[in-house]
Length: 406
Ligand code: MLT
Image (tube, rainbow, N blue to C red):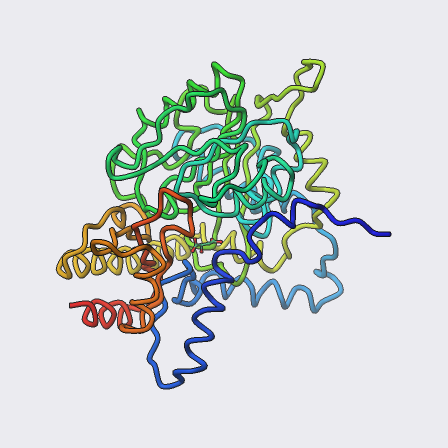
């Protein structure tokens, strides 16, 4: 008799964005004439940078010829891409990352979801609340979350509320935690931590031998000076943090799939008998066993984002979405909502009008305004009473959505 992983019974039946897609599809089916504007899932709408498309065409041609054809590549990623990442994303910020600390993958969602493989189920996990649901759901699947509670929270996860009252800055946990997920610029609130605020967490992790899982998928949207682009800008962070980066939101790769994870060689965790173990070795073992590398063609596309033309095109993409975020912030404010985020991030986090729950406001916007958003409560109990707007739509749709809300 085949037995299942019992943890799957306890998690919500559908992933947040699948549930929203289901509701929207249902509404669209019964209202085929509705001109729905999608500001829900953070999926990009502008095409890939020309530099990346040209690189893919060239790489595809190489795959046609015997002399240049490539089969399996290195699971950790080709040297050309890892060198480009090291030079452009880290050396330029005076951060010394070695190429064997870089693991190229097919997405930050996969990596943040899979990283639990190398940690004991006995670790106490802390997440900000609201939070990108992948961190919580994958810990629940892995048996680290305990039991689900009526609020939708899990008994064994430490939630760090991020609300207007604390300026969306998580406070240190009252009880000791071992694994801390931080996403900055933040999904879903679009808010950030300053260098000093992030340093508090690095110090905490150093004092408590904890590990920070730092999701920096939205770093390209940072506008303000004192906001760190990488956790490794904070002294000592290489001893306590894994960083996740992605080409998805930066260069439009949501459908093309390419990301990378940094696991510094100084970063240690402990075996049951207290022995120090290099996490880099464990992740390498996991990655080479369960993953066969991002496709060559896609890695060439990612490499091209660092070419002179590629950098310029990526900057233009980001500027376009940032302008959308500004339009959304202003539009929502004009409509009388209180808004947060959207300055260093492609997400605007708004308070729902008085008395409305997140899901009620989501339904109202879908049915009355034909606008798809993401209800704050879907990201955790502290997200109740908020709604998230994504700035990844077209300019035309963004303007039209704000017009509908006037
Ligand atoms: C979001 O909308 O939160 C993101 O698109 C989800 C993701 O990147 O997987």
